[in-house]
Amino acid sequence: MEQEQACKDYQEKMDALSQLLQQEQEPLKNIETLIQELKGIKLAEPKAASIAAGAGSSEAIMRSAIKDAKLAAEKHGVDSAQARLAWETVEEIAASDNSQALAGSLDDECLVEVEEACATLQEVTRLITKAAQ
Image (cartoon, rainbow, N blue to C red; front, side, top):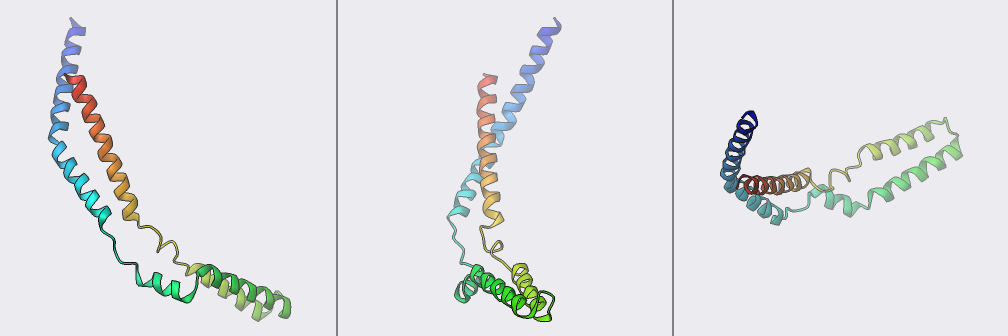
């Protein structure tokens, strides 16, 4: 008797869950449509990227600064003002490196995650609807 009631309760909860998930199908489809539209929009490259590209790659600038710092250390001594200044320049270049900022947007990663979440919810809905039948 108790087992029958548990089965009945389980089925009622599965039916309720199935109904809720069915109600969410339209919003999920709208989200997926918007994701696809957002993926299709290509924004202009930030001005900083084009400036950096025109001025030479940050790697080349960094290599040159390191070379200069090594030369200053050899010529004037490791503890010299010239060597310290040259190494500070290397540190400034490293600190101002904005290559990560110009890389793929965090929004792009979020879109992928939302898309995967929608696909997962659809699969859960499909499985629950199938189990409720």
